[in-house]
Length: 500
Image (cartoon, rainbow, N blue to C red; front, side, top):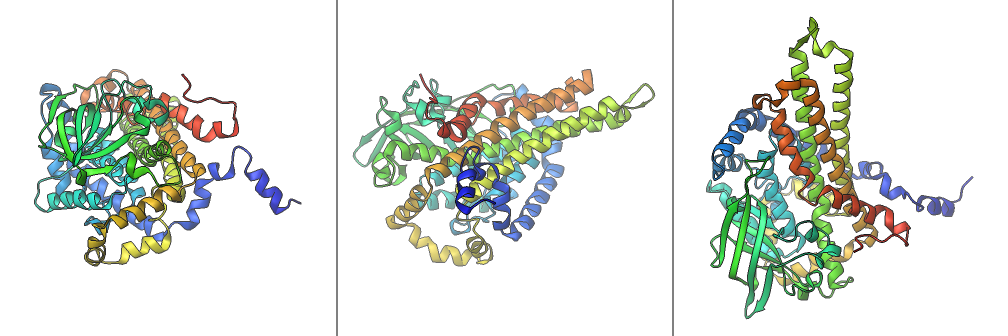
């Protein structure tokens, strides 16, 4: 027999039970209505794929190849018409209030037909995630209202995240590396706000977005301790767009250069800075790290969903080819070697989607979804009319006290172990799924031979698009180090992570 004390002791030795059995613990707590909601989201995505994405994917890719300056406003307007830019905005801010885990399933579906178009929708929610990480309720209300108004007026309002710099890409994804990066985006405190100078690059949806969540630093010698998050509107004096990158893949989603020259950002658009991070249980530097982990734990799972879509898309194209192509007087799908190859591809797809689902469970239990996935809160938001919610909470969101309360709940409500668990699983999902997505593209090309290199067969495009998934949201090398840092190193004090 084993005592309760012994059970607790043994389950807390590595690998910890709570780190490894997330789905087992999460499943009983999930609202049953969420399954129905996800079914609806997947059905909407498949209808959109059938009528919009798949017929346009190759044409958009060709347009961008012939004219790199082209901006896909036609697709953005269509996605706006379908309501996709407000579907995952909470009802209290005027959105439709779909649960955040359902966004991953949606992104997989769109990504299976075209990763560029998936990104044209998904990156908007990366911006929203970065906006919400500061828990500045007044600014959240303002920007979300612009998005909702943009849907109603048929003038799309997108939000981007501007974090990557010319000399610092991976560095700014981890607070431990920030002080070593060549960081130049400076937010100088002046009367009434900040004066912003610097350049951001590879900003997905940059040229298409109305608002940009800009991460800058008050002291370039100590960026990890002086992080500033600002909301900057397109058209603000001192802010301009530079070049659009010529990319190998995901051509339809522009990667933009954002240039700031003495760009004044008033206090009313300062999401959070070092002064606002004081007063929590963690020092400023650790609070900044928590904010980064808060965002990336969810967004890296989103990239994994893109990758599951790529893995699935490559599998489906190879399967269609095998079911139509004859080799030695019988269909390719009836050759055992081809069946084994297709089984391997299906396995890769299944594992990639299981990885992001498990990461979503982590966020539902311990991370950014945890409050909204508790059954009482989920059903309250789901069943209460949106108009009543807005009427009840709208004026409250304007009050500084609401920002302080929400920040206290979120920033002091997560334990260090929960931060590491959610961040570690976000990284695991990201690099596992993206590597599997690339693997499936290679296997599809191996099966299809020369036919797979033709653009009309789609696989070569999926491979070009999928390669980028291994790079953004932190390179896969960085994510491997972060997994080690979060899920392995805590039990080995002698391990030094992100060492010079």
